[in-house]
Amino acid sequence: MSAAGCVGVATPRSFESKEPFRFVSGEELPGLAIAYETYGELSAAKDNAILICHALSGSQHAAGLAPGQEGQEVKQRDKGWWDLLIGPGKAIDTSRFFVVCSNNIGGCHGSTGPKTVNPATGRPYGSGFPEVRVEDWVEAQLLLAAHLGIARFHAVVGGSIGGMQALSWAIRHPAMVARAAIIAGTPKLTTQNIAFNEIARQSIKSDPAFSQGDYYGQEQGPRSGLAIARMLGHVTYLSGGDLERRFSRRRREDGDTFEIESYLRYNGDKFADYFDANTYLIMTEALDEFNPAAEAGGDLAAALRPAAARFLVASFRKDWRFPPQRSRELVKALLQADKRVSYAELGADGGHDAFLQDDPAYHEVVRSFLGAAEE
Image 1 (spheres, one colour):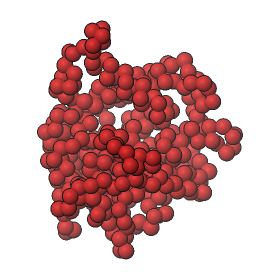
Image 2 (cartoon, one colour; image 1 turned 45 degrees about the horizontal axis):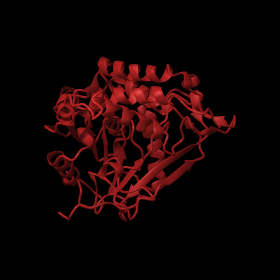
Image 3 (tube, helix red, strand yellow; image 1 turned 135 degrees about the vertical axis):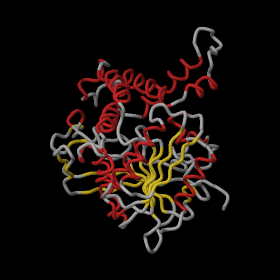
Image 4 (cartoon, one colour; image 1 turned 45 degrees about the vertical axis):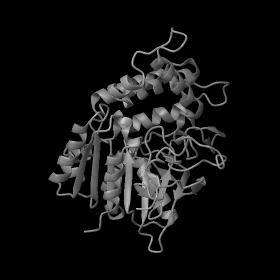
């Protein structure tokens, strides 16, 4: 194994499709822009491509440094969101694989989304942006794959919402997916998860600056509501043990504020600096609606039968947002559908966010799955 390294400065790219894009809802856009990054080199046979699908707050910047960071001392948290896994010698080895990550449509990092100007009105789409489903993200990524000349992915890999995309890819385009890795994922949300998402959405919508979603051009958008939504979400992504270990009941030097309060406020404000409230609504609604079994009369195994991929399902014991029993539910359905599946239940203490963290056992599971010989 080579020494693990960084992919260096990642070059932002954009692909524009001039063809009308039809959403699951039946709504259409006249075309799409898809922001993406790539790492590594596509082989002459074009058989080494891996698609990375990002989670709710992610972007196309999955690994390496952003332009302008070169020559600086950059902390790990300021690199691409999955830099711990992606790079030469890492679990997703860019000395071997050509790795692609795009910003989901409806996003706020360069792909067509609610901030994009509607050519028909000359104003941002805002509240008029179409409803988005996980399946729409997959179909947009399919356009990008065609643009890059990729007819089949060595693997489609994602954590959380990204895992939903990997699962949808395997079902919708089985001939294009050799492997699918669903990490800290679920085949559908629990009622509790939907409840958390609705509370977060209401915090945004109740912000006076939300303006029914048409806040672009105002002096300030719904920063307060978005920050609260992030604070709520962030607590659910961490385990109780992780919170206790990092913060306990310690107070800041002023004695009036718990460290956990300060931490959540900081992260909420930071999130509101770079994320878009409409995108948050779009992403969480797509998350709530994902349920591939619904199209098969509630039979998940039947919904999975079209898939031809080898599967990895990985969960984390301290993840109470998408707990291991939801992953086991998926594994059971895959076995019932006679699919090849490996399951790993990992002990990392990071809660749901463990899929983003540095855990050697977890990384080795991913490395082994991607490196396994074809059968």
